[in-house]
Image (cartoon, rainbow, N blue to C red; front, side, top):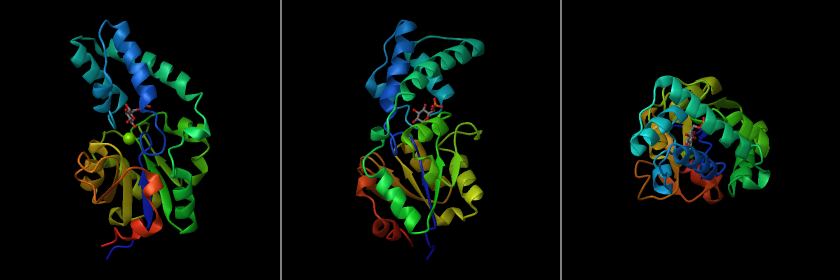
Amino acid sequence: MTKIETCLFDLDGVIVDTAVYHYKAWKRLANDLGFDFTEQQNEKLKGISRARSLELILEWGGVEKTELERAELATRKNQWYVDMINNMQPDEILPGTEDFLKALKAGGYKIGLGSASKNSGAILQKVGLKSYFDAVVDGNVVTTSKPDPEVFLKGAELLGVDPAACVVFEDAIAGVAAAKAGGMKVVGIGEPAVLTGADLVVSGLDQMDIHKLKALES
Ligand code: BG6
Ligand code: MG
């Protein structure tokens, strides 16, 4: 049996619901470029890096841009996104998050963040959760995106724990696959029919407790 020592959390869609802000900013960009961008398309960008998201959006819109133009477009989208997240409030933390983080701290578990976002530090600071995290690994420090396990393996390494002693909390299919590829346990946040690779799926962190976490030890 491997004892669980560490929990690694994805950010967007697990701790805070920022998908709506990503959606608004990408939609504005798509509309400026002369095409639409739907909520269904936005769903497909969960866990996907900013640069790759833009490539997909341009593909869907049938628009070609040079590398330099893509960099400018990604910056433009991010400025709109940052303007919105700057107004985020602690009440935008998803239900149950802080209670679960407190329970983990009290239980002696290590806590890490494993996110594709380059804005994760600012968001954690904004909603007042930064102090719970012993390590933050995000889009600023990884070279490969989920489903590659790099983001979670780096987290385990920083925290000095074996990947098998880690549980990852993820809302994206790519993130569940990344955790599994890293040899970790995964709790999916969302629908069991969608997050089929997860060891357990719950609707949100408000459905998690230490007992359910320990039940994942095997
Ligand atoms: C992920 C989101 O957490 O971060 C994606 O699920 C997003 O939708 C990605 O594209 C990158 O975020 P950012 O903040 O670096 O643009
Ligand atoms: Mg996510």
